[in-house]
Length: 191
Ligand code: VGL
Ligand code: ZN
Image (cartoon, rainbow, N blue to C red; front, side):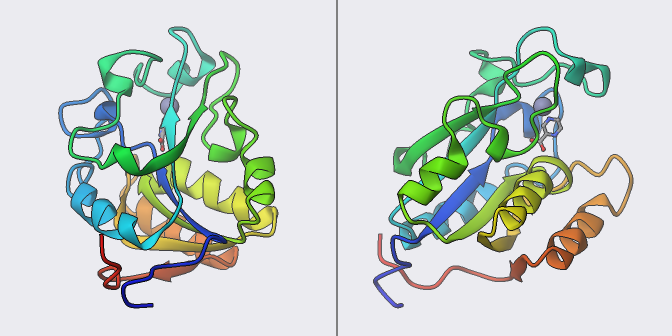
């Protein structure tokens, strides 16, 4: 695939790489910044890159479990500087209601993501981003339930780890659901 990248039936989904999930944010994930160059390096391999963002109202049942974060329109909800957002073809806002968590990108309210993927004849999702044990996990499980092939970029995901080991357990759960874990650097895909 040298120089070419994947076909149009394969997209990269970048989950929630937002300020509040990175060091200094409201719900920081230790490796949040470290995965950004890895994600950027994978982008040229895909003709389509989709990003999700956690996009919460000020009041939500979600904030009974979590410190307030990623309030729609605030700095904390912005994509992290350094992430190559110019390559995003579609941005999915999720967690926008006040009565649910909206962990999965398939719960986006800005777009019917499943329908969009089927219209584009996408069969395979490469998934990366934050957090391995919440939004990445629920997105991957939904994708598998809906019949999409899923590859998880092992070196481009980062976990919250409310309990030590949650990230690894989440990866095992994804594998058990039929997702394939991909380790290492992206292939040479040009720019
Ligand atoms: C997430 C906790 C709360 C995530 C979102 O993006 O994984 N985690 N809200
Ligand atoms: Zn959230």
